[in-house]
Length: 74
Image (cartoon, rainbow, N blue to C red; front, side):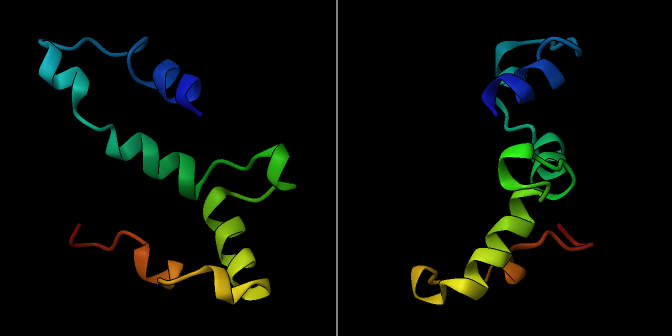
């Protein structure tokens, strides 16, 4: 995952200074977690896999992952 994010950000964009580079790439993380389907998760996105796991093993979760989706005001 780290290499995927690095290839999508550091190697494609120009950063003015080191602090911009250290800032979390929120858009890239959201795209990875909510849109990218992974073979290791049987074609599910990481978010879909977590929601599916919560249904089958609810005792492992404290928070409801559905409440963690970024909304229009985030």
